[in-house]
Length: 195
Image 1 (cartoon, rainbow, N blue to C red):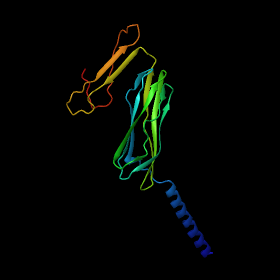
Image 2 (cartoon, rainbow, N blue to C red; image 1 turned 180 degrees about the horizontal axis):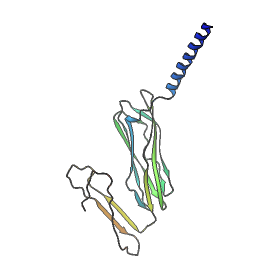
Image 3 (cartoon, helix red, strand yellow; image 1 turned 30 degrees about the horizontal axis):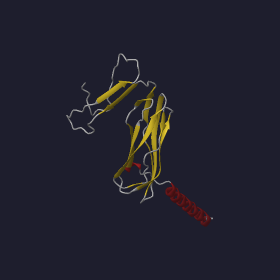
Image 4 (tube, helix red, strand yellow; image 1 turned 90 degrees about the horizontal axis):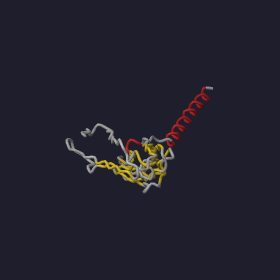
Protein backbone atom coordinates (compact mmCIF):
# COMPACT_ATOMS: atom_id res chain seq x y z
CA UNK A 1 0.00 0.00 0.00
CA UNK A 2 2.67 2.58 0.80
CA UNK A 3 4.32 1.96 -2.61
CA UNK A 4 1.00 2.59 -4.35
CA UNK A 5 0.50 5.83 -2.41
CA UNK A 6 4.06 6.90 -3.19
CA UNK A 7 3.50 6.15 -6.89
CA UNK A 8 0.19 8.06 -6.89
CA UNK A 9 1.82 11.08 -5.23
CA UNK A 10 4.67 11.07 -7.78
CA UNK A 11 2.18 10.74 -10.65
CA UNK A 12 0.08 13.58 -9.22
CA UNK A 13 3.05 15.95 -8.93
CA UNK A 14 4.30 14.97 -12.39
CA UNK A 15 0.88 15.80 -13.83
CA UNK A 16 0.82 19.17 -12.00
CA UNK A 17 4.33 19.96 -13.30
CA UNK A 18 3.34 19.04 -16.88
CA UNK A 19 0.15 21.11 -16.73
CA UNK A 20 2.10 24.06 -15.32
CA UNK A 21 4.56 23.87 -18.23
CA UNK A 22 1.78 23.59 -20.81
CA UNK A 23 -0.16 26.46 -19.26
CA UNK A 24 2.99 28.59 -19.10
CA UNK A 25 3.78 27.97 -22.76
CA UNK A 26 0.27 28.83 -23.95
CA UNK A 27 -0.21 31.88 -21.75
CA UNK A 28 3.08 33.74 -21.73
CA UNK A 29 3.23 37.07 -19.92
CA UNK A 30 2.29 40.14 -21.91
CA UNK A 31 5.14 42.59 -22.50
CA UNK A 32 2.96 45.63 -23.12
CA UNK A 33 5.04 47.91 -20.89
CA UNK A 34 7.69 48.23 -23.63
CA UNK A 35 5.14 48.96 -26.38
CA UNK A 36 2.69 51.84 -26.47
CA UNK A 37 0.07 53.00 -28.96
CA UNK A 38 -1.09 56.62 -29.04
CA UNK A 39 -3.94 58.02 -31.12
CA UNK A 40 -5.27 61.57 -31.49
CA UNK A 41 -7.70 63.32 -33.81
CA UNK A 42 -6.70 66.65 -35.34
CA UNK A 43 -10.24 67.93 -34.68
CA UNK A 44 -12.67 66.79 -32.02
CA UNK A 45 -15.60 68.84 -33.30
CA UNK A 46 -16.38 68.78 -37.03
CA UNK A 47 -19.12 69.85 -39.38
CA UNK A 48 -20.60 67.59 -42.04
CA UNK A 49 -18.19 67.12 -44.93
CA UNK A 50 -14.99 67.68 -42.93
CA UNK A 51 -12.32 64.97 -42.74
CA UNK A 52 -10.90 64.49 -39.25
CA UNK A 53 -7.48 62.80 -39.32
CA UNK A 54 -6.56 60.20 -36.71
CA UNK A 55 -2.80 60.28 -36.05
CA UNK A 56 -1.47 56.89 -34.89
CA UNK A 57 1.90 56.27 -33.24
CA UNK A 58 3.22 52.86 -32.13
CA UNK A 59 6.40 52.95 -30.03
CA UNK A 60 8.53 49.88 -29.30
CA UNK A 61 10.88 50.77 -26.46
CA UNK A 62 11.89 47.16 -25.88
CA UNK A 63 15.17 45.49 -26.82
CA UNK A 64 13.58 43.20 -29.44
CA UNK A 65 11.67 43.80 -32.68
CA UNK A 66 7.96 43.00 -32.69
CA UNK A 67 5.77 41.59 -35.46
CA UNK A 68 2.20 42.87 -35.56
CA UNK A 69 -0.38 40.17 -36.09
CA UNK A 70 -3.41 42.48 -35.93
CA UNK A 71 -3.87 46.22 -35.89
CA UNK A 72 -7.23 47.90 -36.36
CA UNK A 73 -9.10 50.99 -35.31
CA UNK A 74 -12.71 50.40 -34.32
CA UNK A 75 -15.39 53.10 -34.40
CA UNK A 76 -18.59 53.18 -32.40
CA UNK A 77 -21.15 55.53 -33.86
CA UNK A 78 -22.44 56.51 -37.28
CA UNK A 79 -21.50 60.18 -37.56
CA UNK A 80 -18.09 59.34 -39.09
CA UNK A 81 -17.26 57.05 -41.99
CA UNK A 82 -13.75 55.58 -41.99
CA UNK A 83 -11.23 55.13 -44.76
CA UNK A 84 -8.59 52.43 -44.45
CA UNK A 85 -5.46 52.98 -42.37
CA UNK A 86 -2.91 54.54 -44.72
CA UNK A 87 -0.08 52.16 -43.80
CA UNK A 88 -0.21 49.16 -41.50
CA UNK A 89 2.77 48.12 -39.42
CA UNK A 90 4.39 44.74 -40.09
CA UNK A 91 7.61 44.70 -38.08
CA UNK A 92 8.60 47.45 -35.66
CA UNK A 93 12.29 47.48 -34.81
CA UNK A 94 13.58 47.74 -31.26
CA UNK A 95 13.68 51.30 -29.88
CA UNK A 96 11.73 52.75 -32.79
CA UNK A 97 8.37 54.34 -33.55
CA UNK A 98 5.95 53.64 -36.38
CA UNK A 99 3.52 56.40 -37.38
CA UNK A 100 0.53 56.25 -39.67
CA UNK A 101 -2.88 57.86 -40.04
CA UNK A 102 -6.51 57.16 -40.82
CA UNK A 103 -8.97 59.65 -42.27
CA UNK A 104 -12.64 59.83 -41.33
CA UNK A 105 -15.41 61.76 -43.05
CA UNK A 106 -18.04 63.61 -41.05
CA UNK A 107 -21.19 62.08 -42.54
CA UNK A 108 -24.05 62.88 -40.16
CA UNK A 109 -24.67 64.71 -36.88
CA UNK A 110 -23.75 62.81 -33.74
CA UNK A 111 -20.87 61.46 -31.71
CA UNK A 112 -18.46 58.71 -32.76
CA UNK A 113 -15.86 57.09 -30.54
CA UNK A 114 -12.72 55.41 -31.90
CA UNK A 115 -10.13 53.17 -30.27
CA UNK A 116 -7.36 51.04 -31.77
CA UNK A 117 -6.23 47.51 -30.91
CA UNK A 118 -2.78 46.01 -31.45
CA UNK A 119 -1.80 42.35 -31.23
CA UNK A 120 1.90 41.65 -31.72
CA UNK A 121 4.60 39.09 -30.97
CA UNK A 122 8.12 39.65 -29.69
CA UNK A 123 10.25 38.20 -32.48
CA UNK A 124 12.97 36.96 -30.08
CA UNK A 125 11.09 35.66 -27.04
CA UNK A 126 7.73 34.86 -28.66
CA UNK A 127 5.86 36.81 -25.99
CA UNK A 128 2.47 38.16 -27.00
CA UNK A 129 1.57 41.84 -26.76
CA UNK A 130 -2.04 43.06 -26.65
CA UNK A 131 -2.84 46.76 -26.38
CA UNK A 132 -6.13 48.67 -26.51
CA UNK A 133 -5.84 52.46 -26.72
CA UNK A 134 -7.98 54.92 -24.80
CA UNK A 135 -11.06 56.06 -26.72
CA UNK A 136 -11.04 59.29 -28.75
CA UNK A 137 -14.33 61.08 -29.49
CA UNK A 138 -15.43 63.30 -32.38
CA UNK A 139 -18.69 65.25 -32.36
CA UNK A 140 -20.17 66.08 -35.76
CA UNK A 141 -22.39 69.16 -35.74
CA UNK A 142 -25.47 69.46 -37.92
CA UNK A 143 -24.55 73.04 -38.85
CA UNK A 144 -23.15 73.15 -42.39
CA UNK A 145 -22.90 76.92 -42.88
CA UNK A 146 -20.27 77.48 -40.21
CA UNK A 147 -16.71 76.36 -40.85
CA UNK A 148 -13.73 76.74 -38.59
CA UNK A 149 -10.17 75.68 -38.09
CA UNK A 150 -7.60 76.29 -35.36
CA UNK A 151 -3.88 75.81 -35.60
CA UNK A 152 -0.57 76.83 -34.09
CA UNK A 153 2.76 77.16 -35.86
CA UNK A 154 4.51 76.15 -32.64
CA UNK A 155 4.36 72.43 -31.92
CA UNK A 156 7.09 72.35 -29.24
CA UNK A 157 7.45 75.21 -26.76
CA UNK A 158 10.05 76.00 -24.13
CA UNK A 159 9.18 77.36 -20.71
CA UNK A 160 8.22 81.02 -20.99
CA UNK A 161 7.70 80.95 -24.76
CA UNK A 162 4.49 82.46 -26.13
CA UNK A 163 2.45 80.16 -28.34
CA UNK A 164 -0.06 81.76 -30.71
CA UNK A 165 -3.22 79.91 -31.62
CA UNK A 166 -4.97 81.07 -34.78
CA UNK A 167 -8.69 80.38 -35.04
CA UNK A 168 -10.40 80.84 -38.41
CA UNK A 169 -14.14 80.70 -38.84
CA UNK A 170 -16.49 81.65 -41.62
CA UNK A 171 -20.02 81.47 -42.94
CA UNK A 172 -20.89 79.55 -46.11
CA UNK A 173 -24.58 80.46 -45.92
CA UNK A 174 -26.61 83.50 -46.95
CA UNK A 175 -27.81 84.41 -43.45
CA UNK A 176 -25.37 86.23 -41.13
CA UNK A 177 -24.55 84.77 -37.73
CA UNK A 178 -25.05 86.91 -34.64
CA UNK A 179 -23.82 86.53 -31.07
CA UNK A 180 -20.69 84.63 -32.09
CA UNK A 181 -18.51 83.46 -29.22
CA UNK A 182 -15.32 81.45 -29.42
CA UNK A 183 -14.20 79.18 -26.61
CA UNK A 184 -10.76 77.60 -26.44
CA UNK A 185 -10.85 75.07 -23.61
CA UNK A 186 -7.48 74.20 -22.17
CA UNK A 187 -6.62 70.51 -21.91
CA UNK A 188 -3.70 69.89 -19.58
CA UNK A 189 -1.57 72.20 -17.47
CA UNK A 190 1.38 72.88 -19.78
CA UNK A 191 0.07 76.13 -21.26
CA UNK A 192 -1.58 79.12 -19.63
CA UNK A 193 -4.26 80.87 -21.69
CA UNK A 194 -3.67 84.64 -21.79
CA UNK A 195 -6.35 86.10 -24.08
